[in-house]
Image (cartoon, rainbow, N blue to C red; front, side, top):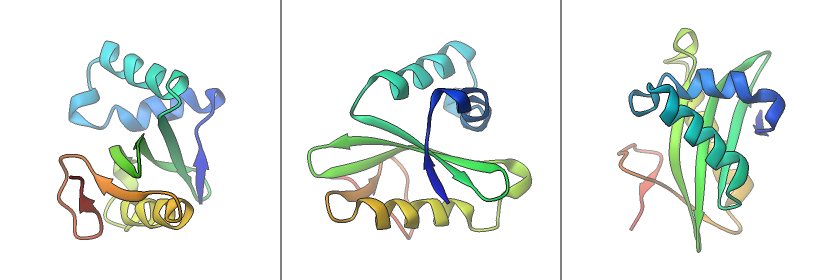
Length: 113
């Protein structure tokens, strides 16, 4: 189930985002989390089954929701969780936005213009 990030999930979200190569630096990671907390055009979602297993960050730009970050706990990878997160985003936002990826080529996400 896709849930919206809130401050009480900060440590979990930071842990998930830290698995991304561009978010390894603590200062960069803190900056990214702050952006999701303060910028109305950025929204972080978490994927929860029994535990929180993944994170997907979106930047809203006119009619597009651009996926900026996507990460799954390494012990739960290759189980389709990333795809489930994107499909849930599509389902939740499809009436208002086109879901697309930023610098990622995946079969289930179209590239942004």
